Amino acid sequence: MPVNSLENAVRYSEELDKMFAQKSATGFFADNALATKFVGAKTVIIPDINFQGLADYDRDTGFTRGAITVSNTSYTMAMDRARSLQIDREDMDETGIASLAGKILGEYVRTKVVPECDAYVISKLAGLAATRANTVDGTVSRPFEALNNLINEVRANVGFDEELVAFLDSRIYAALMNSSEVTRIITVSDFKQGDVNLRVQSLNGVAIIPVVSERMKTAYTFNNTAAGGFTPAANAKSVYMLVCPKSGAHLVKKTEQMRIFTPEQNVDADAYKFDYRIYYDVFVNKSGLDAVWAWISPTVTISSQPANVSKTAGSISGSLSVTATASSGTLSYQWYSCEDTDKSGAVKIAGKTSASMTIPTDLTAGKYYYFVKLKVDGIEATDSSVATVTVS
Image 1 (cartoon, rainbow, N blue to C red):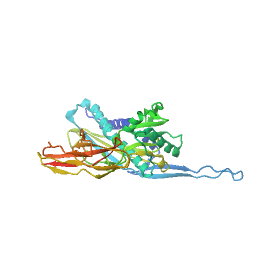
Image 2 (tube, rainbow, N blue to C red):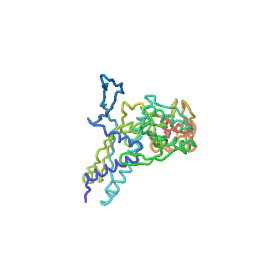
Image 3 (cartoon, helix red, strand yellow):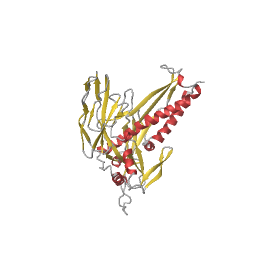
Image 4 (spheres, rainbow, N blue to C red):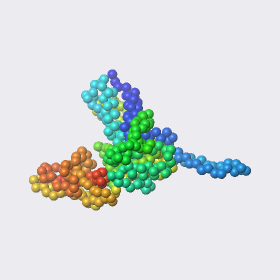
């Protein structure tokens, strides 16, 4: 029996949107996009409403007339991402198509789509905070103090009746949870994200959302190579904490319906083909630009990157090294090997934790790739460039 492609496409799209809402750390921002309107392929309009304050009532002339200003601001969407996936006909029987395809597509959204969207949203909000100097300095050993400072800065801008959210780097979150200052005041509360009701930890009514460190950077490169995905930009810093109103940003997500092709319809292969596309961006109203605050890692300056070298098998000697400084805190190092200059398949090298690394002497002919992760006070700050060791 042939697959009903249209029906499955609609069902898969709906289920994938639900998974996005459940798994995304920033998915709730999509709830704020109800008042947006698409006016073109890449443009959305988000209204920004401003009022004049109260004036004295005059017993002779009555009320003082006030103006309501509605600014319909146009924003251009930047992220148009897609991927085509195929499942060979021989890998599934007719009765298992829906089940296997659903699992594969769901896993793709969970492991590839959600991390990328979270990384983009957080980096854009953190970039906004940095640009407007809406940042605080903190100490890794005292995360509770930094969080309170961020919350106070946002409260000073929006008041105390706005629901706030705090995104925390996973390692800062761990330090916060181990702090004796919060163990007695942390609570669990309801947190609505689309049609999904979540239970999250909160501090004085502020939802605490831990995010893995790879999604907490100030800038990313969103790759258009065969491997795709995203990697931290060369100048990226770690975002330790980010606090803003829950309604402070608009995640405009326009997901195209899933396109499904049976092996008979697929002209390229004897396989089921699934085309997934997501078109999205995040915007902040003009009135909310100073309601986004962040604690960002110290600046790490790499003055000397690991250099490419050529060696001869059997007589390998020498080392790779990096020279770097941090604006504050203590620098530490961890070297990695990887499969290419894109840092694919990076693997930590045990014991290589100094600014230099001796090149392994047992390498055979081929190319080998290495880079070093630099940390400040034990938290990843930036990566060096990849050094290629060519052995002949």
